[in-house]
Length: 214
Image 1 (cartoon, rainbow, N blue to C red):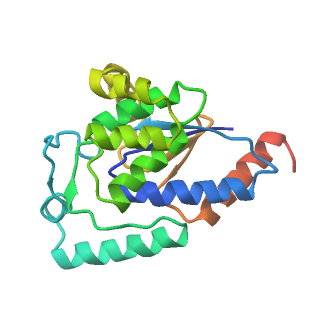
Image 2: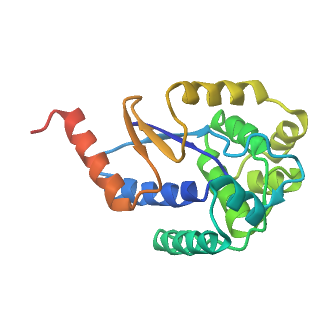
């Protein structure tokens, strides 16, 4: 089963959804042998390098009050905790394009893209670090077990920018305008940070249909 996980490092529901999907995949391991590819999507593509105050940016972007923002964060904390992801204090919103370049490169390696994705989500959402900062990217790559020197070359060179933009355009053309979006075998779409039970049910149904079992 091929799974494209379209998401952004800056997306908190992507952190929830990824952990929930992985819980579901563990539950259906006897039925599904997944290959997961992490695909790029930018929630804040025009964000300046210095970032922006998180409260100001989010209340303006989504047209919500400060009280609603805090309520949303509490829901996220609870949903995150239910699938093993801890949200910390994050005071700024950052640009994530360089993180996507590094993730693209990691996807070309024998292993490490999944681990890098988790490391970047933890850096951004748990520790409040800037995922565009070279040092943050380098530490994430090393935590993922990727080649440190090769990662440094990608971070400093601007490589894979065109490839990331092509992938972003591809998924936009498919109608993906919110994340996380999980595309299974190029045919089936599940959107949002769903609970593990929702992913599990869908995966079982698709695996059963693919096997031809009644």
